[in-house]
Amino acid sequence: MLILGINAYHGDASAALLVDGQLVAAAEEERFSRIKHCAGFPRLAVEYCLEAAGARVEDIDHIALGRDPRAHLGDRLLYAMTRRSPAGLLKGALGARDPKVHLGAALGVDPKRLRAVSHNVEHHRAHLASAFFPSGFDEAAVVSIDAFGDFVSTMWARGRGNKLEILRRVGFPHSLGLFYSGMTQYLGFPKFGDEYKVMGLAAHGQPELLDKLRQVVRVKDGAFELGLEYFQHHTKGISMTWEGEPRYGAIHSGLLVDLLGPARSPKSRMEDRFTAIAASTQAAFEEVFFEVLATAKHLTGASRLALAGGCAYNSLAAGKIQPKGLFEDVFIQPAAGDAGTAVGAALYVYHHELDRPRRFHQTHSYFGPAFSQDAIEALLRREQVPFETLADEDLISRVARAIGEGKIVGWFQGRMEWGPRALGNRSILCDPRRPDIKDIMNERIKRREMFRPFAPALPLERMGDYVEQPAPDPFMVKVSRIRPERRAEIPAVIHVDGTGRVQTVTARENPRFHALLLEFGRLTGTPVLLNTSFNASEPIVCTPKEALDCFLRTKMDVLVLEQAYLERGRVPGHDAGGAAAP
Image (cartoon, rainbow, N blue to C red; front, side):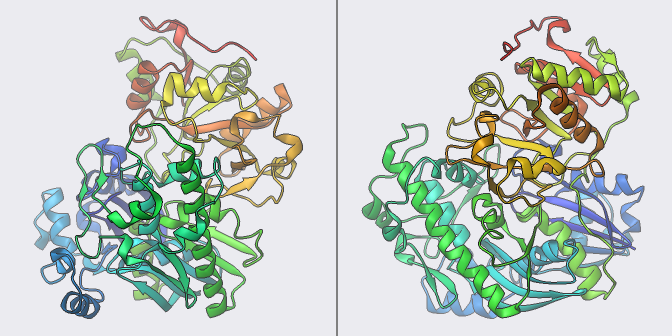
């Protein structure tokens, strides 16, 4: 049985394919279109998923779209009639087309030729399914928190076996995700998806304005509400631009400026008051976030939590869940944002609607395209780039030595990661022991704000040596406190508050990356690498050509494409410019 899941006509368009209940392929459209967070129909991602399974579109049994325009239609109508609301509140609810029609149009196939049964899965049910069904938990509290989807911003459920029982929801216009997005915009970061910048900035300030922000968002009855006077999404709507660089339209109202002072304009100096506002924003978010989780505990009594929705990407909050003792175990979908609804919608149909037993346990995130060594070597010869082909043992030793010498390495192997994190298959790697490497990375490659931290990757078996309260995190979704005695050893991946967003790596799930970490540890005594995404002001690279292009236009020193090893000094027209050894 083939079930195609899609997230379409919203940011982070994506596709995923289940074959007999197992996830065989998943990818975001941006990796193929090269437009960050792109919306529209994920035609290229769908084509990849079908190719990965050796299937045709005519073979699909079910199509699951992670949105249902008719969900909560009564609530929408009531709100539109009783409140001053944007004209687009009901847009699409009454004229939604069959997902099969969209699929046929995108792929140039007559929909009448498609045997697939279409399903519209409510947005938050898709999020919940993406968290619970892959978690490996027999029973759990399941929570989805984001901006909005199908007129809802937050949903609680109990997951048990192959079913989800919806317990409670928070509807429009109240939204924890929209609160954070509005504050992100206020702080001078206007693009869709910029919230992670506020998380990085928050560590540089103190939550001195928390009391004021409790007027903007506040705990109420086990959930929360917005101070709606500080927002205008419910009166004027939110416009989003998706071409090139997605941006939000205005979210906050002028009263937020009256409360906090003038908003920061993009590229202006980061004043101390803005770091205090960022810290206060994070503190206000966490107050509400943990109230929502406490309610999940109260409603279910479960010892385990499965979490999704865009707010699950708040790694600062996510890293505090287990230390607070609310839940013994936590699974966070690595594609927790709207891209993940493609997987969730497919799983919801397979388990909840078709009543099939659970078969898929997500222990890694490598569901994207892979490329053969022959194809890579053909590319390099065509581009007239000199390279060596090395066996793994020689390659890993060479790369570990290069990193130890201060070189920056583009590391490309295996299947591309699903979700926004580079997890050792499309990564840029360097030495975390160097206190200057953050400046070097930003000057030569990333060109990003200096307050944003870089992340460490280390073998799972060594996590306890570096992390105060170790728990596996293969998806790099939680911030952990680094042991004080280790912080001076790896300064490039320690944030100003003594934390790091750690990725744990196992030999089972990523043997080559794990071997590289061990070899670097053998050479240096530190089995940790700085791991950041293989890109430079673009989506993470997908193909060897994109990796080569990124390598050539930046100042990386070494590029590894599977078994192929390239050094900058040997590439015609590209001088050696490596960092000095520590």
